[in-house]
Image (spheres, one colour):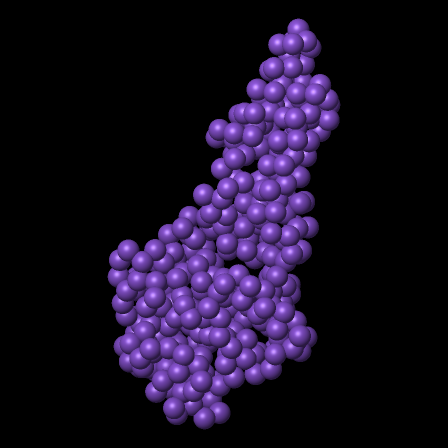
Length: 352
């Protein structure tokens, strides 16, 4: 799955129903195999529910309603992180309250409790005009998914009508909301869409279920490279730094600021003749902007193209080149080997 493209294509509001016509309903109350909440299982340095909410937001959904029964401290912390990102997140404790959060004619993206959907499966759903149920085959591999009929099961992702949610909540009683809502949506004639194997949502029961999914997220966050350094050397540093930093509160923009600062400091060092200090700072800064982009993609909040620090990275590398050239001109080209090993490749990568 290509996260950058999927994020940019999702919910642009140019056609169909538009961004504001799609809401989202996510369950966060079922327990995993160890007795904890499935929503709190770790994924890419955060929790599964944070990934689900960010996927819904990337698809153009607002508001995003999360159905909970209890809010332990870890879950509350996850919701606070999401609110700090400016997401329109609403917590409810019962189906009737959830139904009141949506307009009657609004389509609602339903993400099943413990379901990790690929982002590219959700992209474009804001343009759908009718209820839709994504299905997987009724076979041994999907026996944990809810059966629909003799040939298909529910993938955990669906689009339902706000009226159907309201009428279901009114008669729900002790029944499970997602299952009952699925049945009533299918009875109302919702279209069924089989999911291609490479885009199937993952139904999670324990941390082990998420390990392979997390590895795919990390691998797919690596963008295509053309120069030799970025293709064969930097990925080793990037992968290590990305895996360590994704578990922290470090923001991608902080890394961009640091990259810019190191590059400018290197330029200054070259003007003073501190050549090796400048080289070291350039080497330290080289992978940071790439790591920043990958963190943004993993958190489903890519760095905007017009980010101030990102726009200045290439001019800053050019300034370092000018500074080193100026020093060489004054000292008879003594720094030429340093240029060949440091500034030249870095400036070349910036222009790709």
